[in-house]
Image (cartoon, rainbow, N blue to C red; front, side, top):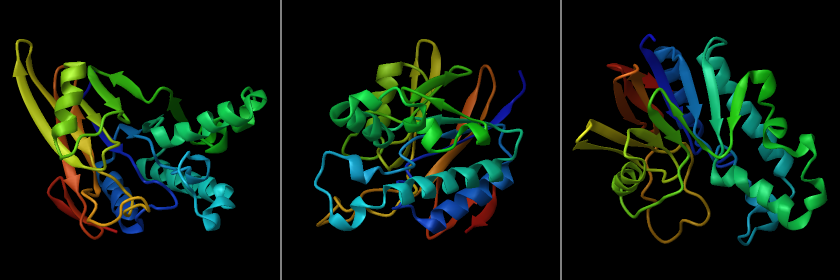
Length: 244
């Protein structure tokens, strides 16, 4: 197969998305013209159905958040173009809705209209929903992520040790790239940063998060990733400055 350009974006957490980061991501996607885009999960926060304490002003806005997430996903699709293959990897925040239904209204579990692909309008956008939130594509693992360590790069090492192959993950809201040379050759794991502002539960200290995304070039034998840091809506992508 030919070389493919791949983009991985995750962790927008609508309605807490950072608009400048989002617009920068869109322009980067337009520049790169990817063959494949992975939406790496946690694009909707689903605050209202979490187990954590909620503030009353947000409880009545679940439909607004779902509509906002659909608009964000549609933006990614339009930037990538109709020929780009797109996958939505379920994140733990999307999983909140399923858990809420199972805890409180199991009789509704079979309703197609309550499924995340239906609520987010993925089928008309030709985006495949991947549940659970990981898949292997041409020998590389792409996943939302289920591990979170204290520092940038620590989670990447743990993921690499678990999978023993190259991969990209979100979830930690951090950017990193770590390499390992073993008997079968070189492997690399990349953390993809986030697209959101600091959330309510991050208090008392700066959030150790980095806005960004990952792109790379993939063949059947080689994966070359590039983590991109977005600062105030600006980034350098493939040697060019991209802005919101």
